[in-house]
Length: 229
Image (cartoon, rainbow, N blue to C red):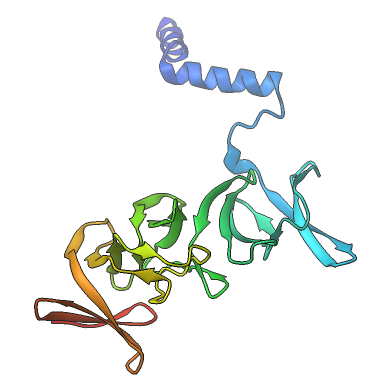
């Protein structure tokens, strides 16, 4: 009997025991206390206006969390994160969480947001491109002026380029960017090819060619590396 009591005492005064006690106490005192933000869920609602139907988000209590009309392309529910488009800025796509906080600016081109390629998605911070994974974690910190989608574990990236048209987020456009040097990185951000290649655009072949002292590798649009030699 004494042994059992000692075990209970030891558990209660342990770190794990105190944590359980504190959580249980919070639940009793504050039944609505948000133990985990991941349990929040936003539900889309829509309303008709003179300009058409606009949508926003409510929480489980029915409170308006996102005003109708702020974003377009809203999924029906947000359990963790979602990518949405600004209504007033069609080229601006952001990732929001289930508290309606904008956590990342998503790279966009042609009016559409980037897609996950090789499990990674491009984001933009301070005009520089980086990559996040499907969990919303930054895998490669934003630091590149231009970056292609990953394909077979590789991305072709640019440093020290000059952005000619600051209104665009198209990181692959040969018209909106000037200069800079190119290299290749892997999915951990390790440098595979150093940043001393020059890009040459070929309209007829629809490819990017990168050259360095006679060495050339070719990058076809849509993220495919045709050959490295």
